[in-house]
Image (tube, rainbow over all chains, first blue to last red):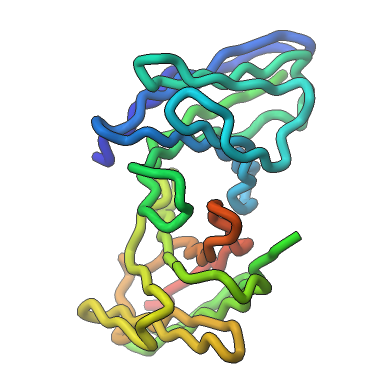
Length: 114
Length: 110
C-alpha cells in the first residue's frame, strides 16, 4: 500500500458524459500527478499540482481539467467523454516538486466509456 | 521536447537467465533516473533509482548502470524468477518533471 488513495476504483459511463476522479496523496506529500494509461500502453503524464498550484502540464486534453484543494486532495474532471478516453487513470504523489523524488502511485481508477 | 527512449518493448527470457533493459535520454541536465515495475493490473512501483553522481547501484538481483557521457542507463535483473514478469518503465528528470520511457514487457519463460 503506497498511502495514495483513489476513488472510485471503477467507473462505467456513456459517451458525452462528465466524470470526476478523486485522489488523496500520502500524508506529507505536496505534489500530485495525474497519468492516463490506455490498454497495453505506457504512462501518459497529464498534469501536476504542487501545494494547490498547477506546476506542469503534459498531454492533457482541453476536455480534461484538474485541481488541488487546500487539504491537498486532487480531482481530475473528464468531460464530453469519448470511447477513446477509456483507460486506467493513476494519481501519484511526491514530497516536493524537483522531479527527483519518488512518485508513489495510487491503485488507479478504471474508466470505461460505452 | 525532452524524451526518453526505452528498448526493447518486449523481452522474453528463460527463468534463471539475466534480463537487460536500456534507456537513452536527451536532456544533458538530467540527474535522476528511476525504474518502476508494474505488475499486471497493479500500480507502478519504484524498484531502484540512480543519481548522476553514481555509476552503478545494486539491490540484490537488480542493478542499474548509468553512462552520463552517452546519456544512457540500463536495468539489469539477474537470476530471473516468475515474479519478475511485469512491465518496467524507466524515467529521467527534466525541467522539474519525470520524462517516462514507453515501457518494456518482461516475460519469464518457465
